[in-house]
Image (cartoon, rainbow, N blue to C red):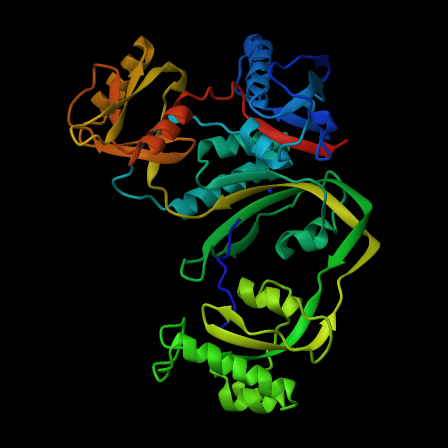
Length: 471
């Protein structure tokens, strides 16, 4: 492997009553101002019919409150019912990042309690059976999206649902693209799709079971931009202490720079680049080949300083100035320059939903608890001025915590916020005070951030993003 190539981590597993917002400046004059339409599906399947309208109005108020924290204007909202489903539609203008806004709108930072399993069950088998049962329910005409989200609520750490925007084939994992582009709108996979994901080369692969449904398909012009690339050769002059320098290298940094400048003079006087690379280059992976690098610069393959110097070359055989990187000093030669270009053609796009089941062991079991019983959060400090939080619950929460701790004496209980473990403790006695102490924060800033999360009003109803369009 070329010593200049970067190692990048692999990643796993995507209205209309106008309401004035106070404090908004005139952002419409900005060239970055854009107007968006966003549609959410509100999941009301677990709500009593008599309470749905109230929950929907509460949802609208909560979403508008979150939206008002951004630089937005011309906001309008609409609650509508279509095909027995409830939708919340937003329209607004902003100069802020729409992805940041969407993350803030549908984020649900629920406070939950979970019990740690003493003996892990065969979670892979259990979850596979759950996935198969869900597939059969969907085949019997259960609504795909609300069913998917209800599955996620059962175990959000291992069950994930995505509702995509329109995507081209090369933007979708092959295991799904091969099926989606051979389906018609409304079609669903007739059996579980099975494959493995590996978050990083050091992590074990995780088996995935998935159910996919195609919502829509269309043909759309696709503009493909090709960045400028430069095929290069290089000579590396390393020095003692440089990154990946050989133990045999004893020259100082100043000596390395002087030698690199000397080689540039030789090249300017007509000496052969490949010959000098074979004689002087400290990059053993290509020095014997005259310093030729297999991968062109321009694809963010190399370190930033090297990429920038290579891309500054505009003609074949052009030589760069001496360029410093963590590996030492480089002299770079352009072997071929391919200019940036743009092409367009019409390609099919699909909009779809995928329900994922990750077959990994379960450590925590949900405990029924009403997160709305949290009354206040207080920041305190110990003798060493280390911050901690005190959670105060109302009478209902006090009773629930008393029951939880009474029934789980000797068990480990975890406190989660937005499905992230905040702290855990072994129950040694019944908690009848309705007060819980969290020692997790390492700094005042972290304590303030956690406090804000705990006090963020959760969504009255789960949301599923349906559509997001720039008007």
